[in-house]
Image 1 (cartoon, rainbow, N blue to C red):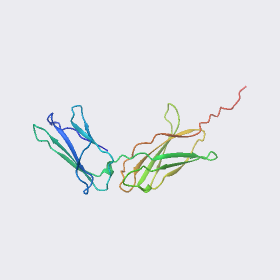
Image 2: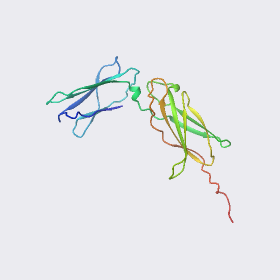
Image 3: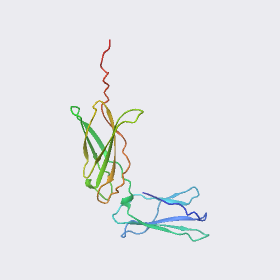
Image 4: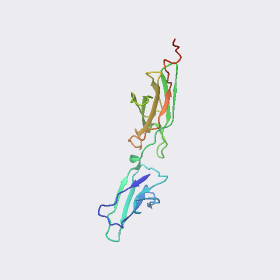
Length: 200
């Protein structure tokens, strides 16, 4: 997790900032262990490792110091799950029945520390024809709670397709914002109807 801030407009040149945070009321207040610095060596952010996301709000305080003048502090309570950026689903697989038009899409939910239930997530599936150089028809499919598979009806079995997916929270304490798209997954067969024909 990264937390960043900007120096105040009127802050003296020697101003230095320090971040303190408390993950929950039962935890101790801790100072940032790994600061992000600008070209002048001023702290402008903090990198956190192995953050445990709780249901209750976390407390953040950015304090400043300068020899020339007092610096106004900034503090805020934040529910971390609301700002978490979800990873795409993992282990996306696609199996097509060549005798039908059906393709079974399967995946696993993202791994997050504070929820291990499939019903907490919803997914967006984006499928398009694999066509070089031009925009192709896109099929958007929303799949909701506790689903980890979907049946896609191919409109053209002679085409190759590209699929990508992303995740959002649909319940529980999971961010409702859509996460990053997965890498494209290719499926289907690219059949040229002219191959195999003999011309005089």
